Image (cartoon, rainbow over all chains, first blue to last red; front, side):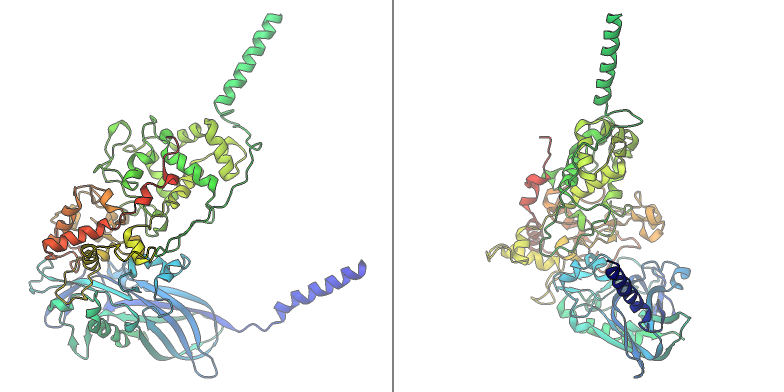
Length: 261
Length: 375
């Protein structure tokens, strides 16, 4: 009996040492902080903003999914997936103080090393872009936004909602004689991969803040050309025949997303 | 002496007997540990198209909990004068709604909003009530008991009534394993009601049968209904001139038929956002731009739930469609991308109405598991 007890103690000691002995990868915490801006200034919803052509625009909702957020390794440091999918909704941007505050996500145990930048898919990856994502755990952003963002007629999530009103008659007053818009691009065709290169050096002992900006102005204005919001054909993207506009808007994420200095 | 002793004995026996009827000592309660506690886990079958249901870890579904909840739901014991139960405003035959603009509470006092359907309430994850002020079914169920316009009762008095009730004390023990009647609380009562409400699942309309291929019959939806479906979802596969109803912007969520969003649906004409007689979400958040916003309800079984809107101001579905066709009343927080003049033809409106009718699940309101156990 004593022998058994001795063997048990040895085994127990060996197992308890195993975890301690395993070299743990040095890591730190990375925070992704996303701000919504309009032409560089914090985006305040319901605030009149200048739109190219001399008229004004006002946003009421702005939100989007991002997925496969990956830190790109420099070769010596491998790539590191921070998150499979996230949802950023700027519904709280109702005054300048709120709009200056970023929406943050925290990722722990990110291996230290030298990274060259970040890669982000704007939208929901094809593997998750279906009704089954509604069955995910309630903590998953896809389940949380399932009711509001799953468009069953497409069988796809809406990847981005940008809603507001354009001062069509230019009288400086927003009302029903103006042009409301509701841009809701979705489906696998509009998933947009964005790569932002900038050295990201993760060192021990300090959290790293990756500060990102989403400039909604640059979604609507590309290479100096603004989307013609006076054209009723451009007021929404809800139908598959609106796909060229949906693709166009989503493709602008490459310029609309940037890493803050 | 014998007479005195006999009288004393009778008095003591009589007192003891009264004690039992009253549910035990009002302070010490009554021991319940002689009642078997062996709850059976209840597994919900989630139909295709519906999302996962978030069931709180501290309130798992059991057969006993659901049955207790069903009884509490239908029992006017929750109200001050035993006239009003949850089912007074949430009647099964109307898809757990009623047909009043404002439901009468104790003493006939009228509430200030129309009751909401409980259909598929367990799947909802973005607030309860028209203004979203409750964050779970448990929290929601706490409200009506003490609302003076509804049950007008105090929870502490409900607890006393339940502790004294010979059947409920047994059922609380069987559902939650409490040892003593004093452990019967409002928290357990609303947990039981929430368990029952999480079973109120509906996904067996003709639309479901077609969409999720539950029935091979190719004629489940008529051409008129199918056209209505296209209008509902802004489907323009027939060409860019096809009509758009913009309905699904607020009433999608796949098989839920609610996007669980809070919107101003342009039914109230106001000069400014400060002028809404009922501020809805704005009264909860304090945000001016949330004034006049209310939660988009599920349109399942919508043909049974007239009158419509948070204030019950629209009597028929035809009028609802006409309201949205007109574009309604502009205010600064209306999403004019979809709440705008739709220019639907008479045929379009008829098709939309027909599609809404196809969302009716007759098996829901005839489900014996949902019916009043006291009848």
